[in-house]
Image 1: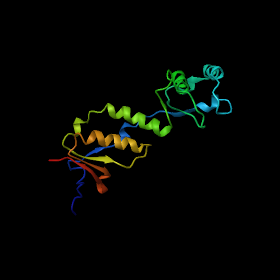
Image 2: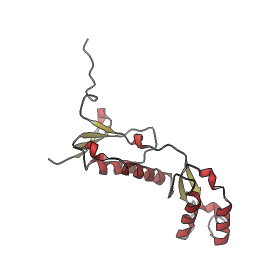
Image 3: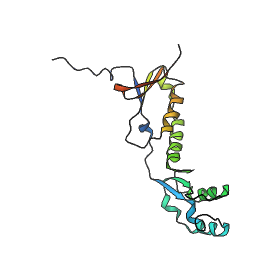
Image 4: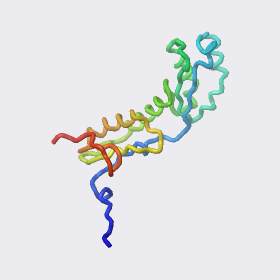
Length: 168
């Protein structure tokens, strides 16, 4: 019987898996509308008092997305003030939804990577993931990879779609 050879494992292909850069930790949302009169009207004195008396320690080591679930028209300082209260406890605070939060986390992680290790190599940007990797993270990754890689494909080794090939 002939030995089965894994050609993918013995090829020069390098897999870039965004799941490897997923940061563990609680993701939380803070809805500003909870401190507005009827969810829409910001009365500064009451707003500030509510923020002062709120238990911000519950967000210790959380990644936090600050947003407003209503169509309230808020001054820019409102979300900044909320962020100033939660920031001492949270790992990261952004204005937006959980997808924007995840994207921001990946932006930070991808900025730390030395992509020169992918120089002149064929790379597969792994597509399937068990963790919540936002589509924007793939767009961020291709921008970094194509500066170095010989080629980039998306998906799995058995069914990768060509995305980029360096000019000779």
